[in-house]
Length: 330
Image 1 (cartoon, rainbow, N blue to C red):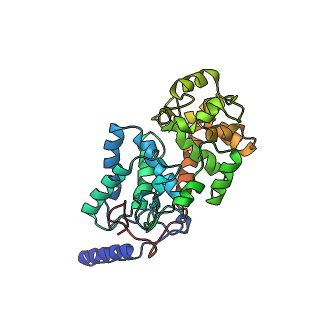
Image 2: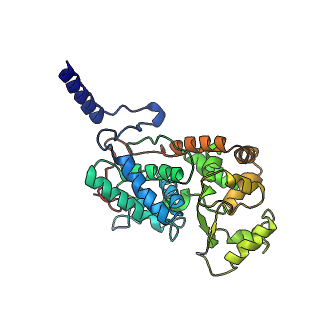
Image 3: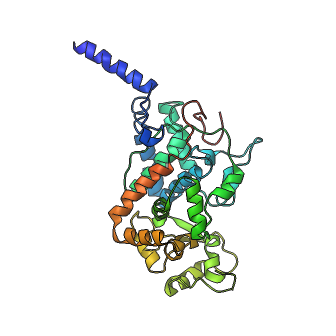
């Protein structure tokens, strides 16, 4: 009887691998997808990230941002990782990404290790989703189950990367519209913006607020004065485009709700941060205040919104491929 039970166990495992049960809640993706085909997947991703983030704490925010910038251009399909070739321009060279996105080498390292242990099994798109989650966890943020089963695209869309990714000087209407286009609502917008509790931004992305907010050669009046003075020393009127400042000046490498508290104090770095509070949209303003008061509420909604974002138009089953090298199609 024992041997028969063992046989049945292996048969059921084989069936599970061949036909993973998809959950309607996850849009055809399934958190336990690699449980049998690559049980070490989570461990490999986490071990590479632990080293990378210990060496460079900024890397956590950079990897989370890679996942975001990927999903907003034709879905979560790892198109952001493709280098340019004769067939298409790379999304890496689009305005929101050029000289700004980081972390490609970390993804390469994770992919190489996964290919050694379980070749042609874990997609680059799933690696981005797992790396985004684990970067948050390693920074002190919430954990969530990552639905898996995305395939990798065979092309990139340079044009959509220039259009779909919210600019740092976006108005609240721009932001709501771009998020709605992806099936994300105001709650998702404010919670995902809270990802700016870690990471840095370049001077070129906030200079307008310091010197010419409304085309009148004056600073943004919503900026707290001491904070404004400090930013001017980092970001001059010209030059220093790549000088960086923390998005959350109080705890730049810790994932917490301080970002929202800073917004209430006039210390949000980007215009796209500030308008969540001052953009005359009651819903986003109330959410900023709620998340500033209640970190657990923010963590809960952030995890929920990351899962939702991770389900934007994934390539599943026979669509797409599993790249051997995340930088190029097979």
